[in-house]
Image (tube, rainbow, N blue to C red):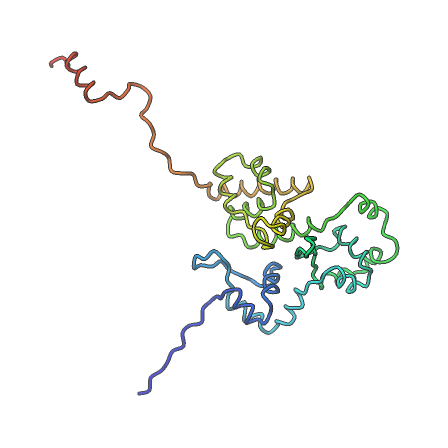
Length: 289
């Protein structure tokens, strides 16, 4: 009788690096696809705290890896301007006005921010006839006035997109509150959350900024600056959202509090030592019954 060899069951999920290799895309492309909601991930049930990719998701995408790769192609200012068939200076003005939004950034060797945009979004914007007046001729006066006043929505728009990504990955109400808090200065958080236990819970769940440089380096400081809301109305929006998320989290499950310390004796008659109690009993014996 011939023996049979059973193949080990295929795991239901795999690590992101393995998923990227199987899809034939770079890890940066994979991460951006997850960011944009084009690849579904699930929490790591093994307790690692990361994310994993269901095998069914890899099977779904393997036949369309080329289109997936193209959908996450990013370009900088020069290539973006060429895609839209406009000068680079006009592209920068369009981006500063917030009419197109960056999805990624990196610091160059001069510690300046290089913004990156989705190529497919730029093509779609340029193809829309409603945007023709923004791409040719003189910039409309109301937009020129904003630019002269120093308008630059690029960092704010990136924060909005990054916050949306992190919220989609959050596993619960307190995690959502931690995400929102990640875009506020600690002083703002302290003003919104007056309960120290809730503050501690939210602080523990604040997401780390995107990795750009070693902690304390100029690149890391730049990352922290870009992660923090800057405009007054943006700060107010994040404050309001933080208060709302914490209120929902509180209803779902109150923030943990440390175990109650052993309480001192209730106020009243002082506790007496054994020797003093005996001396008093001898001086004032109980009456016999």
